[in-house]
Length: 201
Image 1 (tube, rainbow, N blue to C red):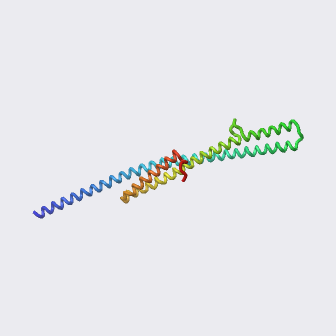
Image 2 (cartoon, helix red, strand yellow):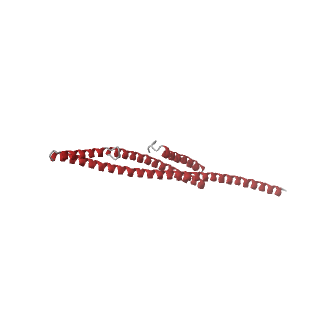
């Protein structure tokens, strides 16, 4: 009789012990699934932010090249303008006064003036300088966005590493830190799209 009761007790204890083990395994599996979803979301956001960063970088490079071209054109206009004014002064001083000399000097000075400002074509020095400065502003805006996207991508990459480590080590706190870093990365990404010049890092 006692042997039978002892056998039932052992069986009952083993059964309940096995049940608790299942509960623990199910809880761990559920937690790991949630972390896996978190990693997937972070990876998706990382891809989007890296694409935004690449686009901003390309825009910045293109604007910088355009600004350099405009400044080179501006410099060429400046050199031509200076040469024409110098030639007009030299001709006026060295040649005998005549209608032909006066007309040539007037033409050179008019051309030099047109090089300084030509609103019709937008290719005077004044207009070229304005365009170049606008391109530089566009370049700086895109460059600020690129830097914010880079910070956002770095935060998301670290978040993915921590979330993965949380699965391996079972340290739940790492997944919370990963979530926080993910939020920081998203914030940087939104700033890159909406207000790149709002903060300077």
